[in-house]
Amino acid sequence: RATPKYSGMVEDCCCDYETVDHLNEEVLNPSLQELVKTPFFRYFKAKLWCDCPFWPDDGMCKLRDCSVCECPESEFPESFKKPYRLSLNDLVCQEGKPQAAVDRTLDSKAFRGWTEIDNPWTNDDETDNGEMTYVNLQLNPERYTGYTGPSARRIWDAVYSENCPKYPSQESCQEEKILYKLISGLHSSISIHIASDYLLDEATNLWGQNLTLLYDRVLQYPDRVSNLYFTFLFVLRAVTKAADYLEQAEYDTGNLNEDLKTQSLMKQLLYNPKLQAACPVPFDEAKLWKGQSGPELKQNIQQQFRNISALMDCVGCEKCRLWGKLQVLGLGTALKILFSDDGQENLGHILQLQRNEVIALMNLLNRLSESVKFVREIGPTAERTIEGH
Ligand code: FAD
Figure 1: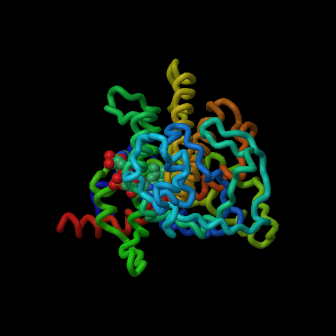
Figure 2: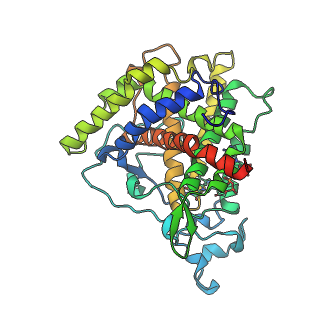
């Protein structure tokens, strides 16, 4: 690859950068791009009307249509007048912007229930059907929405500092380091999607790539790129570990041809000979939770991850909240798959996944795959342009 910074093994993983890039471009990305368009994978069920448990009175989540930014003060709902931590000037109006709006177009046949068992790694309650919205992900790409300022910053700060403190490596155990890397990798991926689909000119509604943003937020920090690859391999490991379960799962949406295609794409991904030959175990989860304090540590980290999941309800832009919730659920599902069996029992007997978890898992893998591809293809040009050589 053009950037020599990224060669050799991806830290804490079992594959090297070159192999990951090669497999992604040749095998994974093309299949995933097809897969996420199928009726089964393009609809996601989410509670988008947020219920932020951490900053209940900041008003941000009450801005369903962002009217607070448009109404005169006399028309504010009573609740907005209460004192809250962010001042009105700090609120960046999101919900009224077309790029932040969520399109809920749904094929009503597409979503048929699976089991509904709560995931211990996440905060979402899937059985809460009354509040759920179904969203067509294809109509709501993850991209620039204009969500920025203290609200966005506060979420990321809480995710990092309250839940997985940045590690001075000696003090932090392997497991906490992994949680940090997963979040950092996801953060890199979100920033990469913002950079790859950015509103360059509001007046003419011109969208395109923002290489400066890509460089400033991700490329100039090699650890953020490395964490992206790590997260990609971690989720890939979860998908391949659950291959037998995922192969037999029902991808029934009532459209036979499409459902057969979904099944065949899943098989292509799960049992790809090239993947099995070049990177059979992308991440080795067996070495975690080994010490005496293993079970307690696992419980602590599970609680930390649940807090991160709950923080997604505080994201003050609906489309960002949609992708934040989906991707954190996807990570939670990967954690559930990798750490369900404690290395003792047969995973196939104990693993039960909700339909929504599988949708989140595969859409997350696709997002990460897109980010890896973008960094690989555009990264060197961005670095040359911005570093001036
Ligand atoms: P931020 O990205 O907010 O970063 C804050 C701080 O975190 C940085 O200063 C740095 O210290 C640290 N940091 C940044 N990246 C990493 C990393 N990879 N690893 C470790 N530390 C890091 N905006 C959109 O336009 N579209 C979206 O779809 C979108 N989705 C979002 C989803 C969530 C869950 C959240 C919380 C925010 C989302 N945003 C989205 C907002 C976006 O992520 C940024 O917060 C916003 O663009 C402001 O960016 P910033 O430059 O202040 O840095």
